[in-house]
Image 1 (cartoon, one colour):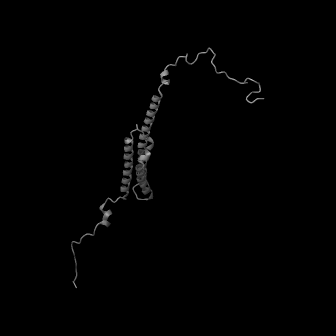
Image 2: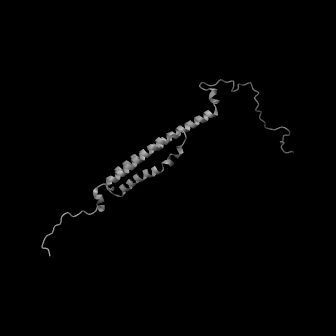
Image 3: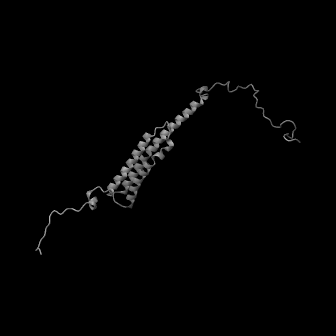
Amino acid sequence: MEKGKGVMGSGRRWAVDFSDNSTALSSRDIRDPPGFTRASVDQDDSTVSRQKKDAESNWKAQKAWEVAQAPFKNLLMMGFMMWMAGNTVHLFSIGITFSALWQPISALQGVGKVFEPYKDGKVELLGPKLLFIALNLGGLALGVWKLNTLGLLPTHASDWVSSLPPAQEVEYSGGGIPL
């Protein structure tokens, strides 16, 4: 028995003939369905790639605006938490206040990293970045306001008494017999 030959001898046992000898209609003979044009199939690859790039740029711009608006939700949540903490100085209110200060500061330090995935030649990121910065500055202002309502900011003259020079004596009074 030779290698490569089957048990049956010279012919293959299983064979499929893919040649079209039928009289059935081919796909070229069938009319296109309504709304379908051959031009849409035969479009240039550059047009399709340009459309994909435009769609990707639109998606990136939309996501950049969503990321820019995200601090607004955090702002509302922090405001509610600060309202629930009250105006007395205790551990919970101080923790909430410093959390309200730290989150915007850390977000402002990472503005470039936040918008890095959306950088594209066609996507304008100035507007989303400015909105992101403005909302985080609003959160920072909310934290500073809470510090002020707790009385932890030195805003009155009595807070700076220790740094004031002693007052000059204007009058001297004495009594009794001088010795």
